[in-house]
Amino acid sequence: MKTPKILVSSALIMAFAFPGLAEVKDAVRAKSNQAELNVACIQLAVDKRDTAVIAAVDAHTSAVKSALSARKDALKTAWAQTDRKARKEALAAAWKAYKETARTANKAYKQSRLNAWKNFNTERKSCGKNATSDDSMGQGVDQLSE
Image (cartoon, rainbow, N blue to C red; front, side, top):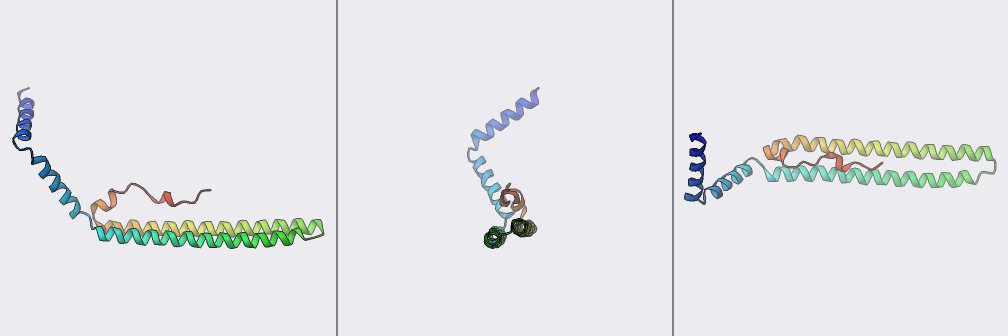
C-alpha cells in the first residue's frame, strides 16, 4: 500500500514544484504531432479529392438535366399520338429511356466519387501519421440521396 501513496505524493510534488511542466509536455506533444503531419501534402490531397467530387457532381447534374430534357420532349411527342396503343408504347419508351440514362448518370457519379476518395486515401497516407487518423468523416458524406 505504501507504493501507490509514494507515487501519488511524488506526482503532486512534481505538479506543485514545476507548474510549467504540463505546458512543456503539451508543447512537446504539439510539436511532435506537427512533425507527423505534412500540412501542404494533406491540403493538396483534399484539394484534388474535392475538385474531383465537384467535377463528378457537375457531370452528374449535366447528365440528369439532359435526361430530363429528353424525357420532356419524348413525353410531349408521345402524348401527341392519336392512337392510344402507339401513345402508350411511346410513353413507356420515354420513361424507359429516362430511367436508363438516369441510372447510368448515377453509376458514373458513384464511380467517380469512389475513385476520388480512393486516390485521396492513398495520397494522404504519405502525408504523415495524423493525416489518416484525425479526420473521422468519410466518403459516405458525398453520396446522393435516393
